Image (spheres, rainbow, N blue to C red):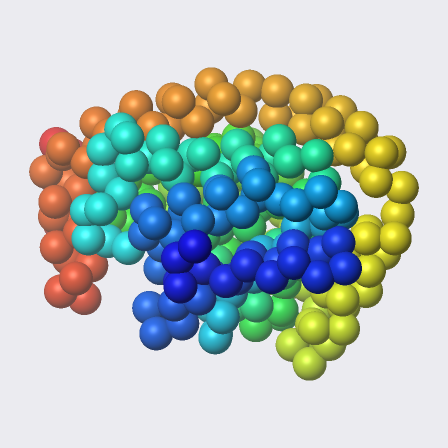
Length: 251
């Protein structure tokens, strides 16, 4: 298990914590594999899975260093989304801070997403010449509709947690000082609930709202791999590292 991913199993609750706070829990392939292994290998008796982040961020997404570029690395990332959505137990995302890029995708793939009011959700991909991935082109639209999903994806602007809750993107946003207690309450309720009915309910809702998720993930992967080779992405990545506005040329 990667030291950048902490896994705790206690009283039927499997907690997976992104644990690289100095990098705002930016994800590597090893971290994604570790998280997928934990979800897919959840011990017998697991009743709830919780994702959260160490420090002040949930996760700012894949590190912009090239490690997750390409078809195979993106399949590694998509494996986690598939594991979360197909898990037979409820998955809770406890969003303790910014959830951006693929970190946002993971947070929104959960069955119940609860966030601190100080947190925000961000799909910044177009800001560097890429497109949303991790199933977010389907999940966001299924949650808040095509118009809001298009605006969130195309404009690449932060969506504050309160607004995310108001629009239905997430379950709820709570004051920061009440966050831990609110998460504990939801997790305790799920852990004590009827797990067989939860499994059936989750399967039915996922089938009804995300029935084409496998196709979506494959499409996002293929299109994203194409974008990795564009001049605009090279410029967007360089501009991001240099902390300046990019000059896109449409190629």
